[in-house]
Image (cartoon, rainbow, N blue to C red):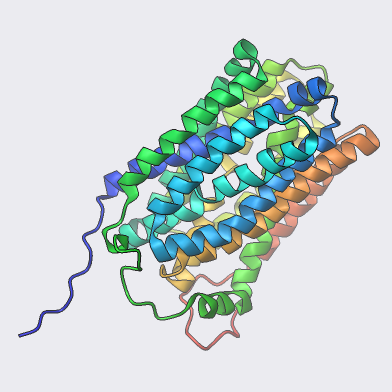
Length: 409
């Protein structure tokens, strides 16, 4: 008498969301505040803004590159191992960022190390667990919850980071955060999936990694999602890193920038949750187009009205609703088209495009400021790209792919 093998027991939805949310809160919350270090570090070290911006640009591109491999490893061996390694790398990167004697070491620690750490502790890895452990009927909503947690991390951590810098100094603040980020390691045990206990995938795969990758890269809708996500990265990282300095240049106090970044995080809690929830009932690609078009309008209005603390807070609040609200629908569309077997890896590829945009946004911000003495050109680029991203998401098909038929957009 033979028995069919039983599927590994699934983790509870509460456990997955709680542990995943706290991990994303720590990882995303810390990185959202890096713009607060731009002026303290460049002024003390005698570096240009482009030097700092280039290191953060490297961080974003490293996050994208390592994210692909972190996704592959998480799909193969489970998220638990990847999260542990990511937590250790994050701590080492923050300590190295604090103690860097020159710009090269700063680029390697703040850039490469922290970028690799973020690849292993943020959305691609966490969403892989959500995709495997949570019913498809609740998947988009659950992804919205996880994204909202990252937003709450920004709201929570940015004021904390501002307080640490003002009370301890920028170096000691980074060392404290280096210790705090190690909390990700024990939280990772809550995402330890039974099917990966022996170091292998919990179920037989219909495709190899390379087959899944070739299929996705040839599929026009996947290409369009990547193009839209490039714009998302450009806009949010440019604003997140350079807005504090932009506001200070305009004569506003540092507290205005701190409050603005916190407001972005607070309202993004609602924006990401709403986007994830709406994705259960509405076209996800229409949601994405609406977000990108609205961003272009909001940035345009911000540049046209007289600058004041009130206008900054209104801008930050509205942008917060749109900030990471692209994340749940984008990843849910990928899962809907290609399934969940290689979700972390394919999510990593889409996110790589996001990080190329992030690299360009933060680096061009520093380069064009040092060249022209103004951020104006980069703001205009951000507006034009918003319109572009809104348009390219309109023709994306959300239906599951029919294997071997790749002609439809």
